[in-house]
Image (cartoon, rainbow, N blue to C red; front, side, top):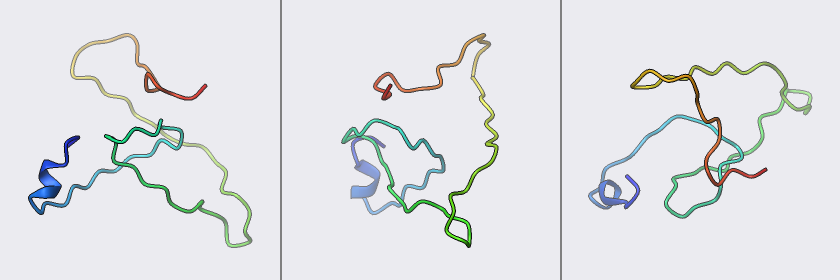
Length: 70
């Protein structure tokens, strides 16, 4: 995925996820979309649900990339 091979062959790569503060690396597939707003123009606010899964037992999860902005 990181080298663009599938896209060069005409495939469409679809992923779903969101991390607004992911560091800008050329090898990452990113999207910069408009901010979602309420009908009155105010910012959306609310709780976010996240489920973390690991292929092996673990007691810790890193919640940021190694290049994460502080």
